[in-house]
Each structure stands twice: as C-alpha cells, then as structure tokens.
Length: 125
Image (tube, rainbow, N blue to C red; front, side, top):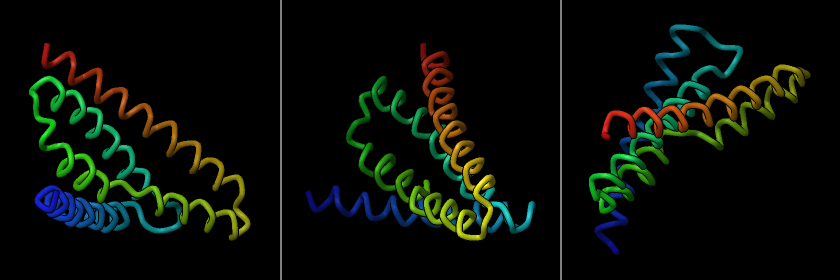
C-alpha cells in the first residue's frame, strides 16, 4: 500500500510539472485572455488516458495504473483549473465565453479519450 502511494505521489509530481510546462508554453505561444492551456492539458491528458487504459489492459500492466493514470495523468489534467477558469470568465461578465470554454473543454476531452482508445486498439490489434 505504501509503495503504491509513493508511486502515485511521484507520478503526481511528474504530471503536475508537465501541466506547468504546458501552461507556460501555451501561454507564451498564444497569450493570456482565454484559458487555452487548460484545454490543451485536459485534451492531451484525456487522449493519453485513452491510450493508457488500452495499453495497460492489453499488456497486463495494471500494476502501473496507479503511477501512470492516477499519478501522472491525474496530476497533469486540470479539472480544478478548468472550474476556476470557467467561473473567472463568468465573473468577468463573459458568460458566453465561459459557456464556450466549458463546452469545448468537455467535448474535446471526451473526443480525445475516444480517439486515444480507438487508435490504440487499432495499433495493438
């Protein structure tokens, strides 16, 4: 149990660091104003979650799930940041942008996990 907890904590540190780097990179590339970095992290993390769930199931790697899925990808994706970004846009009087942001985030993240699952299943067959 303690070893698993440590692997989740290590994975979380790696994922959170990756999330920070995505935030810095996307913000430098696109700028501030709309939370594109959060969308990028959530969509990429959802895609990778789709890949991981198939790879770990097909390769019998369930032992790595706490580190990779709960730790790395849990630390990388940013639902709490998504929630904060949405309410911030709303409180700035940009209800339309808040709705667009929430809709895009949910739709693109669900699409990304589906693509990750389907693409990985196709490759591993």
